[in-house]
Image 1 (cartoon, rainbow, N blue to C red):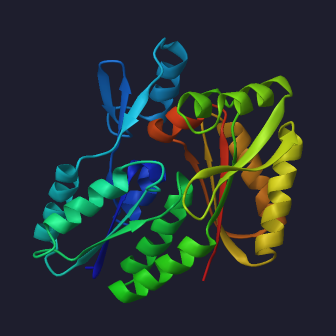
Image 2: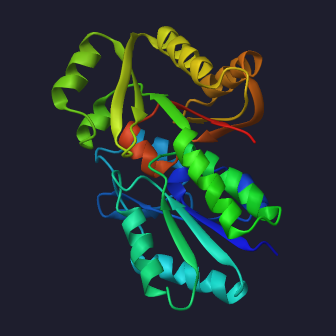
Length: 285
């Protein structure tokens, strides 16, 4: 048994097969369509979400797990593995209250269970890269200190750049100003977005059209990672063909040691909308 158990949340957009392989516990956030509530990845998957989004007159909203839900997860894992430490790695605290819920839960069980809660300051598979890399270490028998050291490295160097098909969802969910969304749509500008050191969405650059935006992202990753071996994740919102084609291109231009193409799930999809492509890179040790 591993000395360390990894917990994350559904916004990490880790493929279920990968989560199962590394024994990663995923706590779901919720998506609300009016009075209907769904658990991200549990009773509403990506395909069902984007279909519902296209048919619904209601803009969905999202909510984080409660501290009680996290506490139940921590207690269950502790009952199953009483000697293990738990590392709980979550969506940027500046984008969601998920980290805060997990932190409160960890304080509630602190006298009984060794739980360390970490703000990834990332979203989607940019969290997933960190979680999967650390879960692989843990599955190999690395202790808590070694896993935390690797987390710190990955928090510093994991880079995400993403493109949205429309700025409508970012604007409606309060992630970007109405004027910026309108101007971008009128000029057919493709914004390249990222997350800053505080885990907030910011405009990295603007390009005219998809082709130029993709090339700019590739150029930026070449500058940052060069020929180093990398773990690359592409998460997509109902754009699987584009994501797969882009991954094949990346494999010819980078030293890709690990590659994951995954769906942007319902919660992140609520905020970025269909057609989004997100690229996450980290060095492999």
